[in-house]
Figure 1 (tube, rainbow, N blue to C red):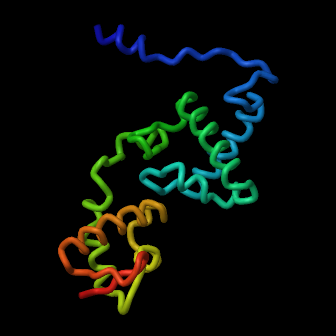
Figure 2 (cartoon, rainbow, N blue to C red):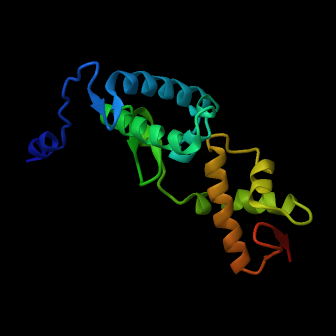
Amino acid sequence: MAAAKRAARRVIRVPHKKNDLYYGMQYSRVETYSNALLRTVRSELGGAAFFTREDLLQLPAFQHISTIYRYGIICTLVRFLMERGDLVSMKRTDLVFKENTKKYDPEPLAERYEATVRNVVRSLNGSFGVMDVVAVWKTDTDLTINNKRVAARGVLARMLREKKLKKQNEFEYAKV
């Protein structure tokens, strides 16, 4: 029974010709670009526990491409790398290298790093924004800037509900 389930989930690889299309891109280019993306991600985000497509959009190697086109390319390349088995999607947004799947922790970032974000907020003076918290947050190098931003937004929202912070304007907070 278990062997039948594994066989049913197995991806069938179809050999591609050089000029075949893969979601609108030449297959040979998809292979080349995906290998370049994989090398870049390993060098730039290799220490991250997980990363998102948003993190991939911010990679310096792809900044010369316009945003909307870059997003389409990144999505196509991520889909290709997932089909090839180099990347695994752990949640809707979280991607990990196949060798890091056992290290992945699905606990929400805001809960996991709440104490750290609260300590960072205590160290700030005056009004501050989410990115100010991220800029001061020097620990947890296994998180990307986007992951820290997500965690900070969650904790700041919780601190607002607890009335430990007040909102100065749409983007800034101040301690009560």
